[in-house]
Image (cartoon, rainbow, N blue to C red):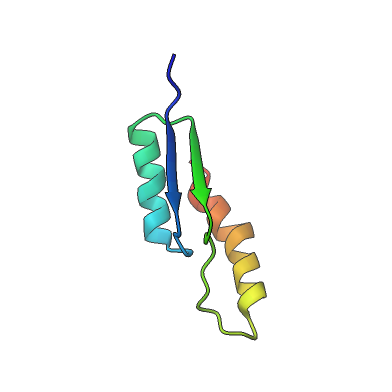
Length: 67
């Protein structure tokens, strides 16, 4: 029995790319998605970087990957 795994890297918080990733994983019946690094956006500016990335990881990414 084969288990399909989808791998990507350097999505940099691009929600369009995350939607494509999840859609592809569903299309090929993958059992896992592996994301290698640079998963959060970095366009928040120095003052808001950590806060913005935390919001993305806690709220947006979870919603995007929920499927």
